[in-house]
Length: 228
Image 1 (cartoon, rainbow, N blue to C red):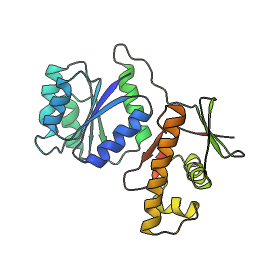
Image 2: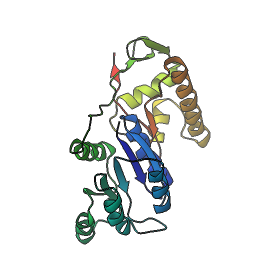
Image 3: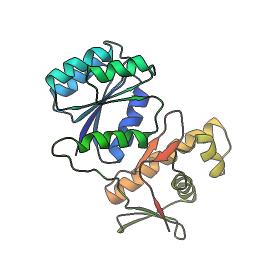
């Protein structure tokens, strides 16, 4: 399993990226600044670093030569809001393997990481799980063909909405689809539903429900669900 360190001072965004990558089989860790990156590397090697340039304690451009000197075989992808051609050229010339700009769709980010990892020694392709099934007639969720879990009507409607959309579903759309009013207390009930659903699935299967909260609100699935 490849390990990725997400170096990003926007904690919410870093956690969203890490959660998505964890859901498709990578080991992940986040670091909010340069000091956090060095601390993470002191605890063990990483295969790929996703590096934001605008860090609070040191510009990301300054980190790239140091990382290349100490870890010449490690993958390094810049993920930044700096979009100018000059910045892109500078990052690549300093030694980055890729230069990506925000916003980026997470599946595209994963494709860049996989393409980079394929060129690294000892790489074994990590495939997303496809073992989750949502059974429409029985209102059940099933994992790996052996763990069937009965869902409440709202739990089922929630997962059904997510399973029909490749992109995260905004909170307002979830409320409408579940027959809830668009009100703050209803939005809080979605979070409680997600909490209970995660706990139910973990207890029944031992697996984490492949669900993530999206950057800016709403929820999405990390892997496709089959519908039967």
